[in-house]
Image 1 (cartoon, rainbow, N blue to C red):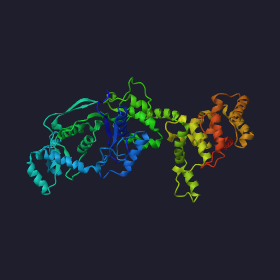
Image 2 (cartoon, helix red, strand yellow; image 1 turned 90 degrees about the vertical axis):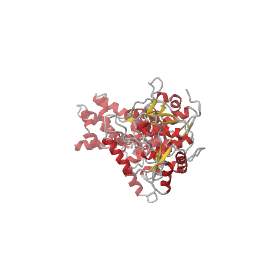
Image 3 (spheres, helix red, strand yellow; image 1 turned 135 degrees about the vertical axis):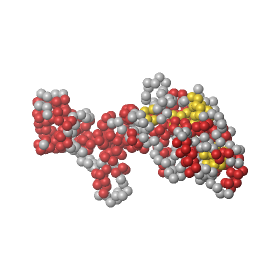
Image 4 (spheres, rainbow, N blue to C red; image 1 turned 30 degrees about the vertical axis):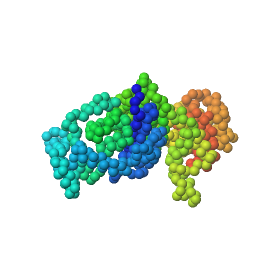
Length: 527
């Protein structure tokens, strides 16, 4: 059943580094919930960690969210009725409400030093108890405390936790209860004057009219403190939904040691945004029926339900993501994939491009390998390479490696490769290669670098007829000569690319079929 009041949700990242998949899944679930319910998505920047927050990270996280296909209705770049949307611009709002809590007797000044607090923690640890604040400053006379602060004594502000259990409903986990003893009186404003997360998030969510707080379950233990704040301020408590932890394949919390974890990583790898969105949606959520796995953003909005989010940890499966990415690469318009692929070819042959650019004073220092100005004919040729190879890759960064036998043929490596040893040792291989070599070297089209697929097939058919060899014993040795491997793309698509590439001004010279046959023959004679 859809909520009866207007839905308002928020995604509130800290601009202290790259967005990782856990954060982005939270953003996605908020976005899906808002869009499904015709609600409002708010982007709020939690930048009170002054030392680590940077404007560049804020710009990057916004760019990553937009790349993924997520948008928002209110935020620092869009404005809105409940701004400002950066916490650093809201400090006066936090001070105002902290003073209100003090004046109403719902919070108190705490003069305990860090040394005193550490002694309490050490004592509790020695007695195998919980390291919670004793509450000794709670017993201070408010007027005396106020006077001490006025006289310049350093103090923090703590919230008075009620002497009863704190309860709230979680859409994912059901009814949750915390004993007041385990919560203790939390600091809401540090002695430095800087408000703490658990305080400012409540002020922001309440004043921004957030109806549903959808976030990771690492915040579950923070929730009772926040509920107590809502109640102390007399504000309605929002609905909570705590999303499960994301684990690596070893069932440990996902971290950098598991490989790519940030959106920037996946973008660099050539994972398409629709594949990543689709995969992240399946982490901890199951559609009705539970068997379907491929969803467009529109379908996700229609299908999504917080009631089908599981509290069990979700395991991040790279192979599943790559499987989805293969699907989306194949389904994507070829022109889009071809354009995206160019940056990966640039990186792969960066050294050659750099040398090429170094000879041109006008382009030196202003053009790098990553934005190499491909001539139209070269760009079209690489588009053909991408069309040939994209069905064989999990992510676009693999294209250059797949293309290396085209871009940088190595006959010696082909001969020495253990993968080719069996085919090169077959009894019929010498005869096949001998006849194939003679025919290619004698062919007029091949000599001019204009060999057509039809003529190539005619030559192979003649080799088959003259040697009596067929099947893999015919094709594998020929393929090793042409591509350095006994497996690969079909010859009728490969041959035109090799022939055309050999005539282009590429950073690497592409050998045509005849040149490859000659190079292979020389390398084999020397081996």
